[in-house]
Image (cartoon, rainbow, N blue to C red; front, side, top):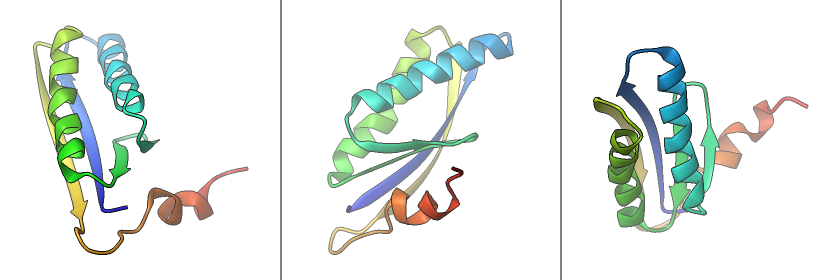
Length: 100
């Protein structure tokens, strides 16, 4: 893997049910990319070889939230990028902590 991105999408909506529904739509969009991802309680992490593809996914997450009904959306993004060599993968970071 060359890049990893963690994104937290926070749509502005009138209630928690709407917030969950819209975040679920954003997560479904991320999963539809076919890239390896990990959904956590605060953010979703995506990893891939193509940095530009990951940045396009980050951008589209905002559009997905707005199309789903959010008045506005904030996103908090963390990026690890290593054009030469490999980064630590999601599996290497969290597999030892997985509950049986």
